[in-house]
Length: 138
Image (cartoon, rainbow, N blue to C red):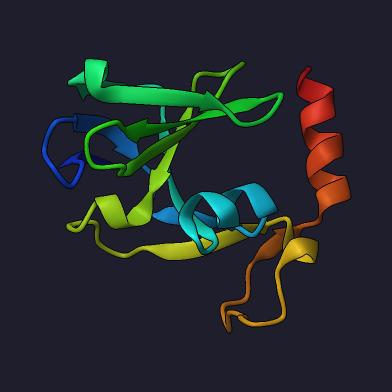
């Protein structure tokens, strides 16, 4: 786990994450691909996250279990936050000084379009597996 600071493109929102896990996940779901135009590469940041400039953060309830946050000034995607646990997943690219990143999991692997693939060998979860996982937590 690494302590890291970052900000959005315009600097209106500053984030300090005390626990950034270098084992990142990739989500292939349609929501993530629509949100960012590509799969979502996310580092798990736990709940120890401080956000300065929260008046510039807009959240969107994107599913029954999570919301997404972005800067209202520059549009930077800031986080995916689980409602029940309060845990944050943040774009891996927001933290340019992270070392030893390793792709650990691919979510919604059955929704991955045919126009890209990764050579990394990771665990994968299909839509049915994800839905069963989150159904247990609701």
